Image (tube, rainbow, N blue to C red; front, side, top):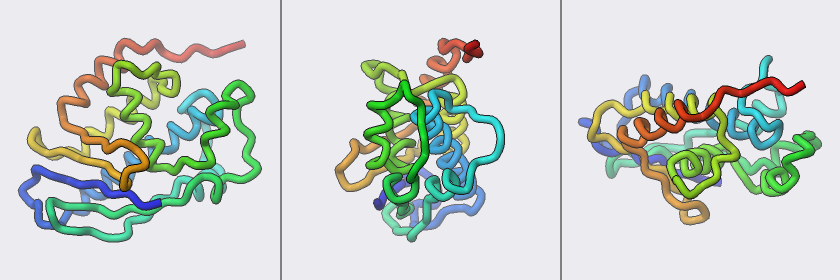
Length: 183
């Protein structure tokens, strides 16, 4: 599936992006996608140890190109039905696991932000660790005027992020209880 990330409000709205900013965007996209996938599969976004090779392959997001008109990053990633086969998830998350094959790493990122920023959502697919990962995406914004917009040609609602959204995320994260071990 193809996605666009539009960076607006920077001094360089000419189709270019600093490599430092590109690295921050790439790292935080990966971290959020990993946490959201783990939340859906295992019920917690935090899992100790290294990613399995299959999970690492499933989370691959490729940069296809840049376009002017602000700066537009063209991304591509495979749906999980093509990359996650024979992976067992949580028995208690069957309804979520049934939708997972149609999802992609970027769609999980978009859905996680929508869930966190929409007060009408239940937030059942968010935990403190994932909320911290969402907050850390703030580092991709270089100033108060910058916005980052995610889109994928209509199959998901567009997502536009501003610095003020991250203040709301911080409040939500502070109100979320710490995870407790279950015996």
